[in-house]
Image (cartoon, rainbow, N blue to C red):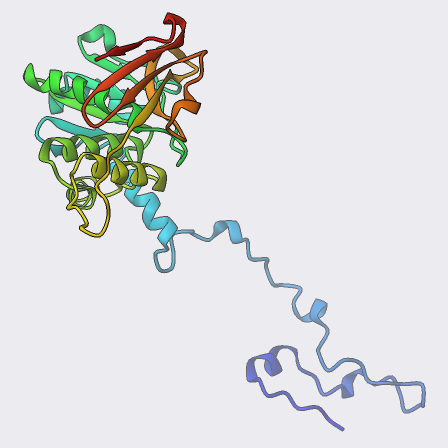
Length: 289
């Protein structure tokens, strides 16, 4: 039985009916494969080197679009509100970029990676050590950041908040400041910041913290079916980072109550009508603030 090839291009280049491969009419003779001798027919073919193909050809992918967007904003100092800017590390180390935007104060969110580049050149710095992870407590530095920004603006200055890419940590602090000053909810402020900083994307942990904080501050409409946030909060006074043990911040205790008051530490107890500093080494006495 003679095999038929249904594909014309394959038939023209490789197909054979086997007749030219018959060795004779003996019983031990058998036709070879209907494919022609590839080594003989393809000896002049060249190999295709995939490394020579452009990776930019073809339709855009989500990953490529994100890389292009990051590259676009890498050296942009984005103004997100009056006197406040957000940027990436390349902006923070460019004296020309800072001068062009009139930056007088810088909040460096990643002090464990980048120094205060122009501290000796008249620019004031606040250096933080924040990891871009959902478990990082960013609320513990908010009010120190607010004080720094307010002091800069009251003096006629301008503030740059920067992290590595200007995507998560710096954006979170900028959003928190705008929420605080405008008394606005997270969703409203974030959408506005996103218009100015197209790559703004705080990690989910930061988002949840800001939304929880906004409820405590009454920045969101109250739900009549839910009790108003309140009660007692217990904050442990601990170093913000092991890299800066002298910088103490208040971190929320996981389970507020007398059981969390460790005699080895100091605490701040915040109630509806008063705030207390609690320090066991002072004979268990509380200082009413």
